[in-house]
Length: 484
Image 1 (cartoon, rainbow, N blue to C red):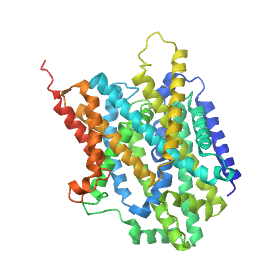
Image 2: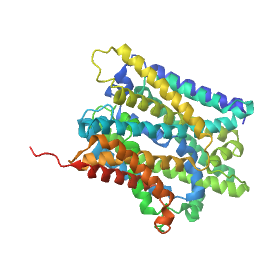
Image 3: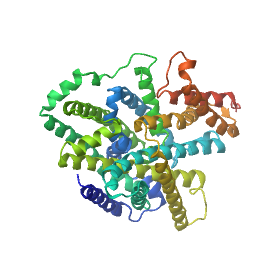
């Protein structure tokens, strides 16, 4: 495909996003930016959250991941489903009852100042790394297929992408993102479905026959029963459950969209609807991955990196129309991972660290100026982080993402679990040390697990261990509440 055509598609799609931004950002204020004035329709939020949850990582890495892990990722997805139920029935009622804008304000009410800053700080760290990793994946594809042909340096590509994100999120914030996410979800899902159809046509095989071939092959294996294996099915399931709880329920970006709904009932309807659809969509991605591997084997191709399988096949071997479909899907997947992260991080820094909501006597104009400065600073951090990840592209991005989550979201899991399931009073000043100590211990246990635990390897359950260590540390330095 011509680099000019690819760039043209990117620019057209971006113009459509800016059109949506123009309609949604008019008369926007701080409350519009942070919680969308609490008027977002639940069904629009549910549909848009599909694209935000999947992002470019799922679009690129999950299909290629079938090469190494078969359908075992589906067990993680089933764990997701139970995790979403916990969010809908436990966390959302808590957030709505306390009328939170930033979900980390709960930690201040329950524990104190230092616990509050610790929780918000770990979110900022985790979301910055995760969003940068997602952005790198998509920007790298644009670099390979467009900018390398024109000898444009990678850093300029990154800069262009981030400037576009800044421009359409700067004013409208969450109110804009709720609606742009629906557009992005539509094109991403359409790209997956059409890619399946084009592969079937290229192989001259009916869809029903392809389903049968995948079902009978080793690629469809979901359950790994060896408990030593890092993808043992019980570890996968419970890891998926807790990954969802922390990466959605304890994540300002995802909860900010839920908190923009009119009330708790609508937010719960959004969560139940979204979680059911997400299971089907992930199965479709894995099926696409299996078809891509069948296509590669059939054509005798050699593609070493799992993250390169989908773009290489779509752009170079399925014809120009399929290539266009893939690129539109990829571009659609790129923006939700960046715009939501930028908005939620701006919210977290503005409210949790700068106390923008609590400042009395400050004008709306001053609040907006401060928010703009925070927004641009975070965008600069993204720029630097993406450049750093460009030197570390050594395994499937989704694997890296969950590894990062295990270390950075674990302390959040421990903090919220302790707050929700005990009434003990923590030593607030020691909380930061506990939250840092836990992931450090997990790192060394994971690094030497084979020697220490008779061949056992940690997988995504590292998140659970991290949360447990934080919980135990908090308990050790806590005391019973005084009786009234």
